[in-house]
Length: 353
Length: 67
Image 1: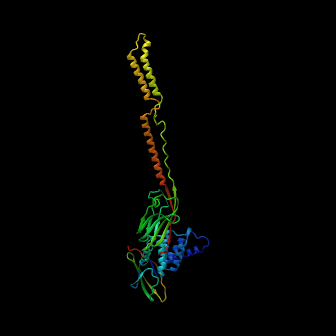
Image 2: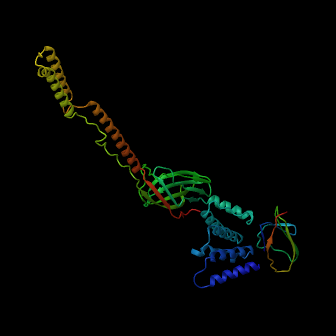
Image 3: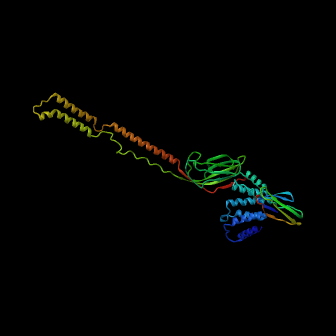
């Protein structure tokens, strides 16, 4: 009793103090509300708890403290015979935390039973998403985690800013919890464009009527990927000459003619008694003709088939590399990297309990 | 008014009244035995004397676990 009076006094002083309330105000009001409840001063408890719940900013309650405040607020209303107010407090608690369970040590079975009924009737989903996710479009890397208050039907979509569904992620029944995946693609299979979207989870009633909607704003930015450079075409140093030059043909012609003439004429020049024989003429002519054949075979501009084949293989190999780079670039551009930043979820009741 | 931590069954003069907390239990003037019990916990028991139109608060009852 003394402890309750002290906390109530401290809370009263704090609330009467002009100007800003301190960061402890919400917690102090909560303590006072719980103490008043334990003393069964239910009107005071209700007042303290309601003020604790309305404290905001630095003075606001943490999520656990809010849950505690709503638990006691519901209990105080129940003891005062106000079932509707008790249900309303418990419903706020379920919407805030669909997994919450009243402390069975503190609250008697009639209260925990009422809370369980409210939880069963309140169709709501709590959505948890990572604050920032970076992933390549097409990779199912965005993973919302859903927790439901009770078994019911839900529809989960990624919506554009104007509310149109860009992609439907799930439609069906949720029991306890559900893990979903989004790959950053639209229904058509394209990567989403940069912009603001929302993850929308609609809880539905038995006739598929919308009961409650949870929205999580998503800020999507697109990082275009680096593309591969096309390989340089094969340089002249790699390619071989495809046509014969002047050198080899002329060398064969000149050499052959000179040798032929030499064979025929040279003996007569160096030996005065040497006779011009038919044999020398035939040999000399043969050598000269061989030179002509050599010239014709290696005449300037004649294609060199071995080099042509070699160069063709080099060019085909380069073209394969060019095509491969082009394919990879197309693939990369179709699957940009996405950065998805999530905002604070908000829950909207649609006239449902 | 009777409250306890944790909640327990309120028995007055051997009659089960209900679970704590209990806001209003009408009792005739005289001596009464108040007992709060719960499985796994040591029961609380106290005798009180009340007179006509008295309001008695027993709200700081703490049940300790059974050793």
